[in-house]
Amino acid sequence: MTSEFTRELFDEVMVPNYRPQQVIPVKGEGSRVWDQNCKEYIDFAGGIAVNSLGHCHPELVNALKAQADQLWHLSNVYTNEPALRLAKRLTDATFADKVFFANSGAEANEAAFKLARKYGHDHHGDSKYEIISFVQSFHGRTLFTVAVGGQPKYLDGFHPAPEGITHLPYNDLAALEAAISDRTCAVVLEPIQGEGGVRPADAAFLRGVRELCDKHNALMVFDEVQSGVGRSGHLYAYMAFGVTPDILTTAKSLGGGFPVGAMLTTSHIAESFGFGTHGSTYGGNPLACSVADKVIEIINTPEVLAGVASKHQCFRDNLNKLNEQFGLFAEVRGMGLLIGAELVPEWHGRGGDIIAKAMEHGLMCLVAGPNVLRFAPSLVIPDADINEGMARLGAALAELIGQA
Ligand SMILES: *Cc1c(COP(=O)(O)O)cnc(C)c1O
Image (cartoon, rainbow, N blue to C red):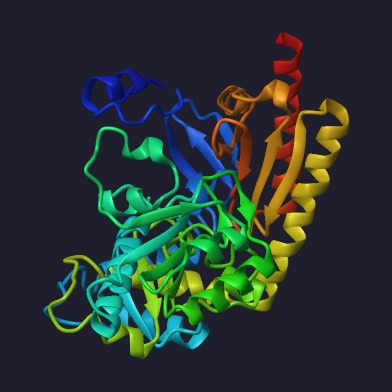
C-alpha cells in the first residue's frame, strides 16, 4: 500500500522538534498496532505510558462515542456531568477533596506549582515562594515546568526562567534537610522518576520528605503524571509508599489516549485557587472526562491492579532471561508496568539503536534517556503478547550484537 502521507512529508511540514520512527502506524487494537504496510507490532510503549487499556478498548470507544452524540464542549462558564462524575470518582478514590482539570501533564503541573506559590503567599507571605525539585526529574515542557524539571538541557536557549527553584539529588534526605527552609513553598517529586531513567523513590526518603515539609510548612507535590492510574500496581504510587502528598498531578494513563490531566488537592489548599485565579478553556471537557471516568472505573479494581503486579513479574522474568543470553542489562528496575532496563556501560548511548531495531522486528518500546530501555505497556496486555514481544526483542538484540 502506498500513501501520500509519508515519513518524508513529516520533515517537510512539521517543526523539527521530534524525530519519529520511520514507519507510520495507522491502526491499533489491544496491544497490537499495524503500520501503513499492514506490518504488525506489539506495543510495549503504550504511547509513553498513556494507552493504559491498550488501543481502542471497546468500553472506552463506547464511552467516547456516547458522549460524542451528547455534548462535546461548554467551557468552564458552565459545568458538565462527565466532569462532575470524574471529579467525584477521583476524590472518592484518593486523599483529595478537590480537582482541577487540565488537558496535559504539563498543564496539571503548571496548576500545581502555581497553587503551591499562591498558597505560600496567602498563608506565609511574599518570601515563601521557593520550590525544591530533584535532579533528573521531568515535569513537562512549559517554561515553569521545564524550570522545575531537573534536566537543564531542556532550558537551554529559553532563559530567563522562573526564579526560586533548586534541584537536589533524588533519594538524598540529608541534602533536602540542608536545603529546605521556611522560604520553601513546595517540594516537588515523581514517586517513580520516569523520563529520568525509571527510578523509584525509597520509601524512607518519601517519609522523610513528608516530615520535612510538615516542619517547614511546605507543600509536598507528587507528579504522578507517569506513575499514576494503576501503572505502579496501585491506583496511585503514593498508596504503594504509604506517604500522602498535599497536591497530586495525574495525566497520561488517565485518558487512556484521550488528552486530559488533573490536579488533586485538599479543600484547605484548594481555597488558594479562588474565583478567577486560574483557568483553562478545555479543562473538564465532557469528551475527555467521559473517557477518563471509564478508564478509572476499569483500572481501579482488584483484578486489574493485581494483574499489573503479575505482568510486572512476567516482564522481569523475560528480561532476566534475555540478560542471561546477552548480558546487556546492568539493572532491571521499576514498579508495576513502568519498567526500566539500564544498559551496561559498553552499550551506553545505544538505547535509540535498540528501539529502532526492535521496530524492524515488530516491537514498539521506549528509552528513558540514552542508557535505559523503558517499557510502559497497556495495564491489561495479555501475557502471550508480553512473551511474543520479548521474543521479538531477543531477535532484535541478537541481530544488533551480531553487527556489533
Ligand atoms: C509526561 C510527563 C509530564 C508531561 O506531560 P505532558 O502531557 O507531556 O505535558 C509531566 N510529568 C511527568 C512525570 C511525565 O512523565
